[in-house]
Image (cartoon, rainbow, N blue to C red; front, side, top):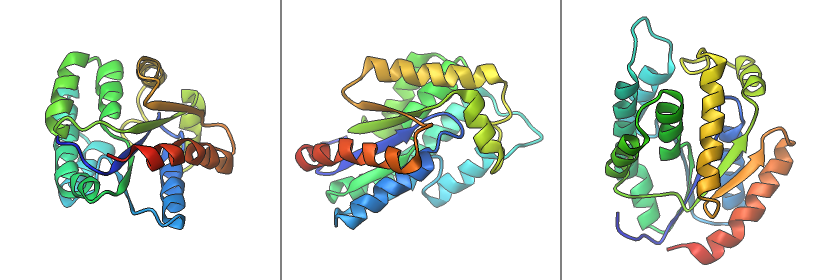
Length: 212
């Protein structure tokens, strides 16, 4: 993907970490400061993506293999970039995305066991080489996150064994440690407003000087 004048911020984390809430709060901050911005999510964000989201998230009476998951998420991401994220970045907007390609590395790689190099290659094809400028990880113990999530609803991923969710957390922390310049790790147990302020304090100066 060619250089663009926009800025891409992604939120990542295990189930129940509160990233969707924090993504929306950051978007609201951007709006309050009259910064042209867009909020979207994965999987979803387009008509095709929303159908794929339903397939992937709702419990089914048929299995979905890890490789099929990988291709479905990638198809969703490719469409989202073409229809939503790419045009917004080209227009110089700040895009806030709830999950992105790191989720695929962690869920289908670290947790499902698919080869990380294979996933990375497919991610690069699906994204056209687009990487987030900033990724905010909301770190939480899986047990706590799942308890939070079950108060709302449960999907295919929630019902996996605890070891699956532990692998997710370990995967995220591994990715963050390897690329500290891109990742901001926050403790999800902090008060919602405190987390929102920490995220804003981190990204505001980066946005100001780092839009491409």
